[in-house]
Length: 415
Image 1 (tube, rainbow, N blue to C red):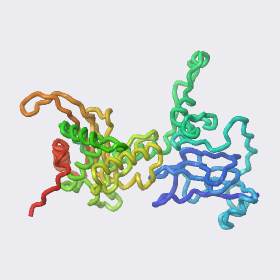
Image 2 (image 1 turned 90 degrees about the vertical axis):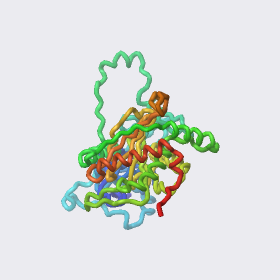
Image 3 (image 1 turned 120 degrees about the vertical axis):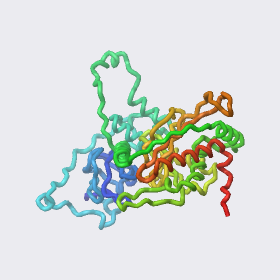
């Protein structure tokens, strides 16, 4: 028998440490190579870490919510002679030196793991990382949950049923004895969101601007385009149309398609438009990025928004798909309300929010008529975007959205 110390891997782009989100292996467990052993969170993305070897877990470093430095021991395996023979010699560390030489006692081998009870599943449970995290937080053993998805995969409804089963008369009678509060540790993506939101609100002087838009013609165009959509193509929402209009507007307001490099005190103005699409997921708010949106058609923008939103919600989005936006659009859809004050997605300097579109009576061409009205709620970094320019940009966006055919008419350059 020999030991293999697996260290926190370098997860790229200057990452110096990673936060433990959830362990999927514990001391005493027998794991196989490539089996998921831990989920970690960097400042950029969530990462699933597989086992580099097959063996028995001797010890792990870091509880959920704690950070482990890159290059520090993460998990120690005990290898069989066969497994050790398959590991490169340089990768298998020598037996730990005496405690006096290291300053840290070698981890003691835990008691053997209990045998798997008859009827439980020994193979890895099939479910999403988000469900694994939620089960870990709720103290639910996924091997005891029956999955209703394809191939026995555990879906969200299966987990919810396991966490909150139907109460029996006996449990109802004892409900008064249950604790009345629950403590939820802020870790992983939720911690990262909290830190970034706090930093953005603390460091950026937000200038908010709300404008009313008559979206009647936009809605008419949207419905017309959806009627002519080929089968199998998703229907258009307002979002891709707004993105197309925003691309046109940024030609005249390039100071809003900017990233602020605070370390160097430099504004980096971009020619390409990389639009962040704020997306609500079971794990919190994520912002996947439609890259080079200025080179895409309306249908391509719509398809990319759908693709990225689905990957973000299923926790499959890569780090590259979640970073690099130059301006963000956010929408609460049917929950959009009348107005909002979106927080800027630093290091960007502007964010555009769509509120709910509703029909209401307005004065139009001298008569009271019913029109579809939608508000745009925007925020700008007042250090770099003056209030006049912010208002002028939103007015230009309003003009395109109220006359949506002009979104697709090339600008005539003066000689």
